[in-house]
Amino acid sequence: MAKKDKVKNIEIETPSDEAHNETEVLTEEGQLLLQIAVLEKKNAETNDKYMRTLAEFENFRRRSNQERLNWIKNANESLILKLCDILDDFERAFENTPEEDRESPLFTGMEAIKRKFSKILQNEGLEKIEAEDAEFDPMFHEALACPPSEVEKDKIISVIQNGYVLNNKVIRPAKVAVSAGLADE
Image (cartoon, rainbow, N blue to C red; front, side):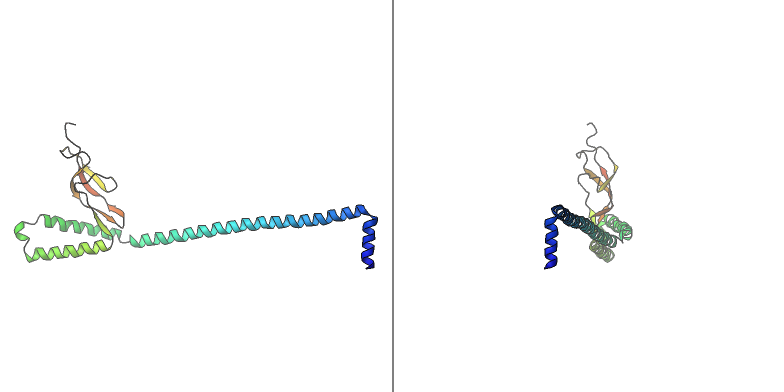
C-alpha cells in the first residue's frame, strides 16, 4: 500500500510527469496498435498472395488435366487420318462397282468390312463432314474449283475428297467445287 501511496503522491506532486507517463503509455499503446495494424496488413497481403497462388495452381492443374485429356483423345489423329484414306477408297470402289457385281458374295463381304471399319472409326470420334449440296463454309471446306453453274453462288456442287472431324476438331477439310453462280452475272 505504501508503494501505491508513494506512486499516487508522485503523480499528484508532478502532474506534468503524469501527462508525460500517459503520453508514454499512449505512445506504447499507439505503437502496439500500429504494429497490430502493420501485421494485419501483412497478414491480409500474405493471405491474398496465398489465395491467388492457390487459384493459379488450381487453374494450372485444371488446364493441365484438360490438355492431357485432349492429347489422349487426339493421340491417334495421324493414324485415323491415314485410315480415312482407306475409308475413301472403299467408298470410291463401291461407287464404281457395276450393278451386276453388287450381288456377289465378295461385294457383300466388302460392304460388311466397310461398315465395321466405319463403326470403329466412329467409336473413336470420327465424323464425316457432309458437304454435298451444302453452303460453303471455310471452317469445314476447302474450295478447289469455282466453276460457273446454274446452282446459286457459294453452294457446293461436288465433293472431290471427303472431309473429317475427330472429336469436334477438323482433321481434314472436305475438298469441294463451289458454284460461282451464273456465268453472265
